Length: 340
Ligand SMILES: NC(=O)c1ccc[n+]([C@@H]2O[C@H](COP(=O)([O-])OP(=O)(O)OC[C@H]3O[C@@H](n4cnc5c(N)ncnc54)[C@H](OP(=O)(O)O)[C@@H]3O)[C@@H](O)[C@H]2O)c1
Image (cartoon, protein in one colour):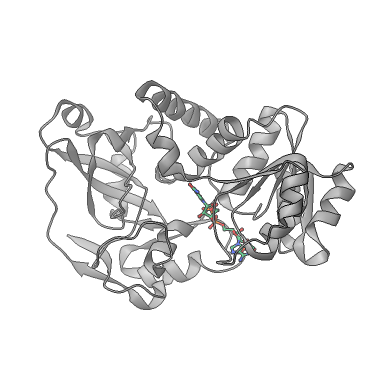
């Protein structure tokens, strides 16, 4: 089979290539998935750059999520149950940018037929993170302000739509003015540009009082520092990414006297603490909210596996207009898979 492979950490455009590699065989409790499509997420590119929290042994194939059809099951009941089904392939160790991937059977989630391949490919990482952070970690109450940076990201847009759906208000930080109109159309209550003045001053002008009680930041550096400074007394900031690669500056006096809380969130850890029934409930909630358009991803350009370097370049481009997808199955076979 063919797979995207890297032998050293570095710039994805330089180190990724497509190779013939042995077809993997599923072991006990595992299934093999014939991949249809997989998104290029920031976490995939961080792995290739060697800057993710957990790194694979090299050579490696990236890709934490995607959609495909289970073509072979290893020994075990669950694997046999999903054999032949179209599934969201949740690959916590990476390896989905390939024609076939082997994953634990419990991480192959059957996808309802009315959810198209593009949305099925992005079924898990961003939707589950948005729901987990907003409803389960911060538990943002109706009517409250939630501040978020990188609001024009795929995940940021989901949070704006969740705000509309759940009844909380969002104040959204972007770095390009062009993004403002789109986010307002999606339902953002306020959009500010980080290049138009200190984030905390802009936020406090909008929300009034001494700032916001709830905040999310996946950037770090100056933006993350501005988000922290926007917290009201007893405010809570969840950090879930490091897009700038820079640390956040926190004045201990603000943290102490204002009783503020700063914490990290990683979906992998959060899911490990879920019981099987609560994970099943989460998948049902995601499917329902994707159907309603709340947790659907805005999809941009698609690329064939052979175009892996162009795809990685596009995924890293500012204002690229939606999530970049890798197509891993020829068009005719992909059409036949719909409704599976
Ligand atoms: N912790 C977890 O478990 C978890 C799970 C899922 C996602 N995440 C994180 O969530 C974030 C968003 O993911 P996504 O898939 O939604 O991303 P995405 O669709 O690829 O969008 C990335 C966004 O970040 C903005 N951006 C990138 N670098 C930036 C910088 N240095 N300063 C300011 N803005 C910057 C881009 O702005 P432009 O539009 O201006 O280019 C773009 O809007 C990522 O950091 C990802 O790693 C974390």
